[in-house]
Length: 420
Image 1 (tube, rainbow, N blue to C red):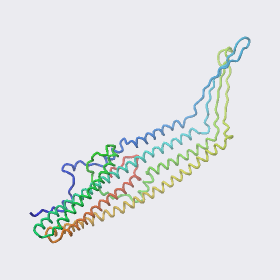
Image 2 (image 1 turned 45 degrees about the vertical axis):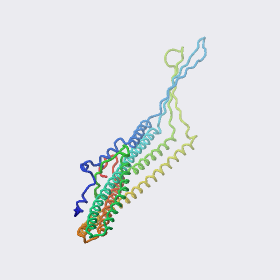
Image 3 (image 1 turned 135 degrees about the vertical axis):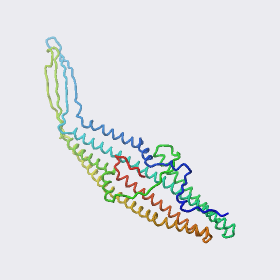
Image 4 (image 1 turned 60 degrees about the horizontal axis):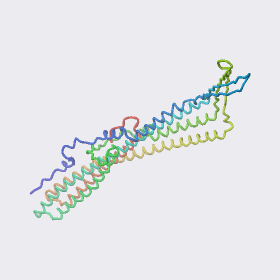
């Protein structure tokens, strides 16, 4: 029996999917949308933002007016008892502008709370991208493993046929079977990697972690269109951590203004009306008074408030500058990683892998015509397997670096891009 050796180029296009499953693909856009829709972490920070926003009108309000009444028994006059009733109304007049200052502070804090929503959204997008890329990478490695098992199984058949016709040693057939077993062993590690990525995706999708998932859409290489300067500028506009630092800075300025105004004395206007029972109908007396808190007698308190606010502003300024430099550093590192991974991917895709395939095709022909040993054929196969594995490793490294860039440069108040 002479075995038929399937063309290597046909095998490279084969899928490990059973028939009919090619259309059932896990699409990143759908995974991301499901992750973000109603995610508890997002709902939590959105509720906190709504609570912070509800504090704005409270902070802008004046102090509540005070209403009081007093009834006094005055004793007797000409045999009659006199009762005096007083009604008092008072209102603090915020000439210092404290309500407006409180309102500006509350608005800044609400804006910072909104940026927290963007930060959580950014984190979820990044985690989803990373998990999807890991899941897709595991599938690609399993596909390569299956393809090379097929290559070895067919080589083992050829080796066995040669042994039967005394044209090869039994060691060749045994070595082929050993290589198949080694690939099966490594497949178990790949299955574990795939299971871990599946658990991560199921957790993000808020479904039982043991749920099965369809095969993912294939990873593709999409070159970066923006340069480092453009990426950095976009990150400085959109990175949630930097936007939060900006809002914290604005809130610290509002606290300084509020602390400065808190040392000013706001007068309270008080109106008192009196009615004497037995002295006729209506109000007999009206008093108008003004009271002013003596804040100057407690100057140390307000100096401490101002010093605290000034120190907090300095801390917020330094935090902003630190976040800005950190953003520029992270963008630069991610961009360089993406550029390096992209270049290595192109070399492997355009040079190394095609050359390794051609070499294996030549060795296959030699092996089938008994001009090459199994060891020579297998050495070429191992080289191709290593090149293909490195190709997908570089693609995954590139997609991870691009995902890190997207996390920092995308506008997370808008709809995210549907590319893992």
